[in-house]
Length: 328
Image (cartoon, rainbow, N blue to C red):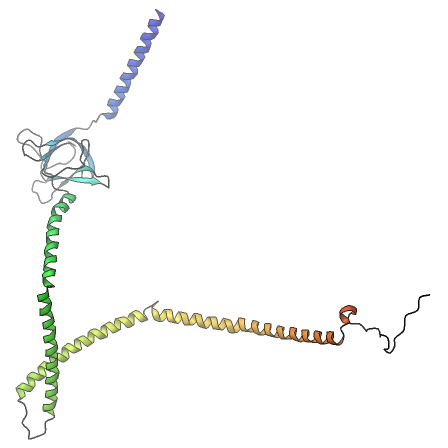
């Protein structure tokens, strides 16, 4: 009887703990916010969007996605059902787009208002009893994908136009135009020479009429003006080059810095290195003289290596020699 009582108590404890865990899970997962259902219908793909995905109104979390399915009213469209807090100011001007978080590809629904729609501030209602529908506009990625094909077509057309412009026929036309320009310049030079010849014609010799001379002069002036423009361009380019050379930390400054470093090195050589070399040379000369004197002394008195520099006792036959005493 006692064993049955223990088993009953253990079973009751397990049931009680299970009930507490279930209650705790329900309390943690409960959502006390009052929400309203809306629908989004789109002909575009909703890749990356999952149920329970966040719904944000201008970046503020206001709900979540409850279901994703196909639209029974429009064949081929995707129907997304969302639950939005009643505190969110959803109006007739509200539209939805898909937003993506970083590089994960996880999508969420982004709600915003179109300022150009007259229904701004008016509540969104449905006439057939179904949840109101919010228009789902293409996202930035979708618009880029749609415009990518058009951009490729434009690039292809531009490439064809460039190839057509650089065709052999057009290249020949361009070379002919350059050749004609050269001939025109040669004609202007010849006309200028003729004008100078006319101006130098002696009196009594028939000259070219004034209108012809004025026309030639006008063409010459135009040529001179064109040459002057080219000269101004050349001078401007030369000015830019000079400015680049003379600007701060430019080639001139670097060359001057190198010259200063070279001068400083020369001063260091004159002030420090050369005196030391001269002193070393003097020391070497004095050492050589001492070595010479030592060699001469050894040549004259080699016994100094054994007896030192003191006087050497006279040997047999030398004055002052005293024979050693005979041992007795």
